[in-house]
Length: 212
Figure 1 (spheres, rainbow, N blue to C red):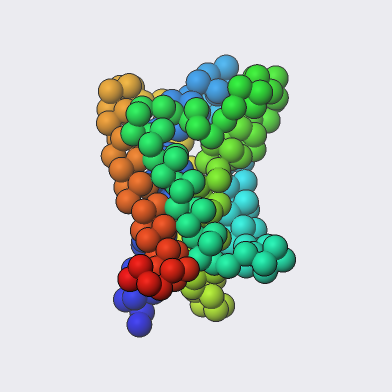
Figure 2: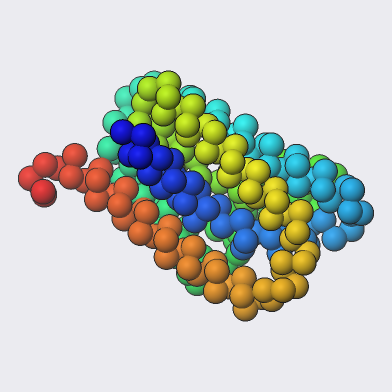
């Protein structure tokens, strides 16, 4: 039973990595913080990842309530979330970094904001629709206090790993280069597409039992 729960948390962690694509976001982070000193850049990284952890944890805790309030079944939301993940995945596989998560208005607003850790880094670039949808689906699919605590801890571990990446972002970006970043982004897009198809298939089998 414990190995099954660990597999669930590991699958959720990998799904978050694919949905958020922190390596692909690193060049954006470096660009947005290029005018900052090292201390201010580190503070921005901390703020962004704390905000990501808070946003996803709130989505985890309130997700089932929202589904019940709007009378939406988990399977319907799973199909919708899968389609959303596929859309993001196709954008990633075409080499677009963050364009699917941030519109032109948000880009122009972010240039004038002093605190970019929350907007646009945490929301919508990191804790975007794909990550939020995945969190709600996993929270509703695996209810119970132990699973909820495990998923919340997974979110915190994910945020901590992203913080470590952002700390070394300038060095990593120089080492990988734009070509390396694009390759990793496309691989993450492929993983995210597979996860989205899994969501859709599971939801359709439950909504239309005759398909199975």
